[in-house]
Image (tube, rainbow, N blue to C red; front, side):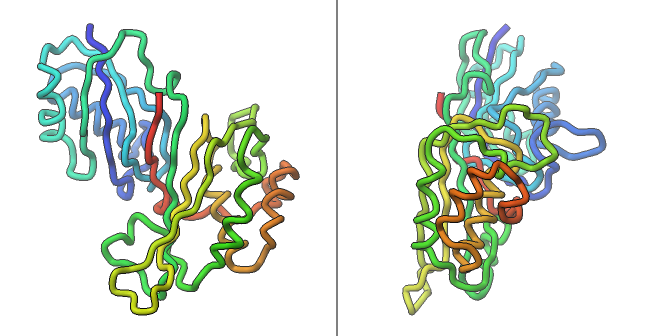
Length: 253
């Protein structure tokens, strides 16, 4: 029995998240179907974490066990020939039998992208949240340091969660900005929030983003992020930002 580990990317627009669900099209279902088509085996694909409906992945990590003797260098080409065009396997390797994509993940990085130009970008419309007016980026940056370290993130977790312990550790939270090549005024037209942590609660990053956008709009002071964090009350935070702006960026082991 071989334990195989893959790095995959996917556009989550058309899917009901990663995890298999009844009567829903999911990333896991598509992967397991492709493996069955290739090997004739029914396997369970394990991922580093479950992404929600509409959320994307640049470098999701999965693993599964198989008896198939296909050379490791041929696996990605073979899988990609059987996967839909919005799911792609990039790397494959054989790992120790004990390797588990979720349990052994040490750090995960997510990226949330906000477009702040007047008009949406037709080519990136499925991968970023369009906010048609400018945001106060400096105020948004000032709000972030309080999130670093170990905290109870109850305020930034949906009430529809089964997680009793809501303590997580964030190692890095940063904003990056860019302008469109055709922008004559040099104004910021895209904001990316990168968040790295040891784990995340359901909708945690999207609620942080919703709160951050309100700060950028001037509806809250930068200091409000710390107050909301300490309140441990979901009602104190901003709305949950749209799923399409969120991408699982990287997983470290």
